[in-house]
Image (tube, rainbow, N blue to C red):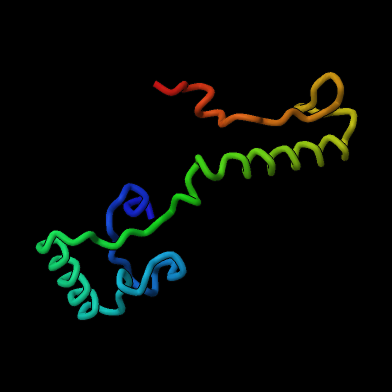
Amino acid sequence: MEAAITGCTPLVPDEQCYPEYYPNSLRYIGVTDALVKLASLAVQVREHRPLPKVEFEAFSWKQQWRAYSDCLYRLARKEHLRNKTRAPCASAKGDVPTIDTDPLEANNPAQ
């Protein structure tokens, strides 16, 4: 997955990958199938044709930070409601703060 995220075209074993994320053309079963598919990819490179890509943008921090923030908010809120005498994430009003911007971008402004 890490290689595909950086733009590489992976060739992965069918039994050891998430088949719902990789097209059949990039999955192999056995050594013979791997060699056939690798040769096919080599032909594409030699002919300057684009290689297939696998998209994992939906799993990037840019796409997932709000889901994590919301989850942490719900967990903190649940803990606060369960134990009103101790609320480490609570403000003076008793509300749990939310994050409106990506914390990574807030600490590293765009150049």
